Length: 221
Image 1 (cartoon, rainbow, N blue to C red):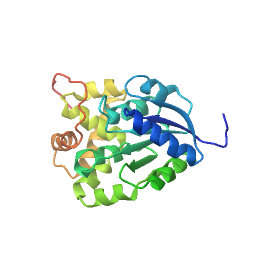
Image 2: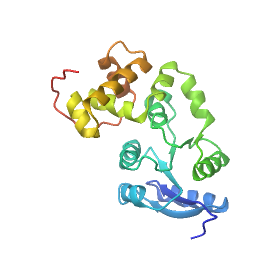
Image 3: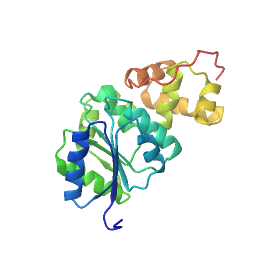
Image 4: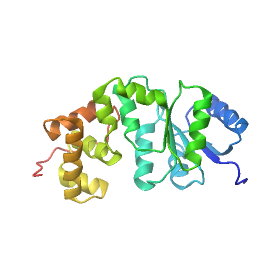
């Protein structure tokens, strides 16, 4: 393994796309640590593999790239993920991707040079967000508010929308109940929502990635 060549892990469920990305990145001076087809082996590679950048396509035919990213970040918060997405509507997924707080986010519609710049930035410990992402989010103020949520705030509201009570959310995310309440308050304020129910509904409408169901239960917080 050549330490002068950053190692890139590619996660995409289209073989032709993976091969094209491998060629592009090798030509740009990167090495390919591995490439994976979700869901087989992708989660394990992302959690335990050796790589400098993981290029993860979010719009997968099989599996859920956004949820996969969430799962990985929950166990490996410093994972150098570069999300590669074609979401065209900032109100239907792009804000969720931006809200994950990963080091990199680039659109598939951007020029190859943007992808190379993004991989290079994340490999070097920096961050990269495709300028087009900010442009699309800025075009819709509500999307900008959604993008301002932290990854944990998004997760808490998403679980709340799916019927989890405060204690259930705390147990699911391994947090204290008071921390969960703080996340709910902060997120509700950021979204300009009148109630936590309204805030949770807003996140649920703009996520499109359901979490495991839970039976609704009374919540005293």
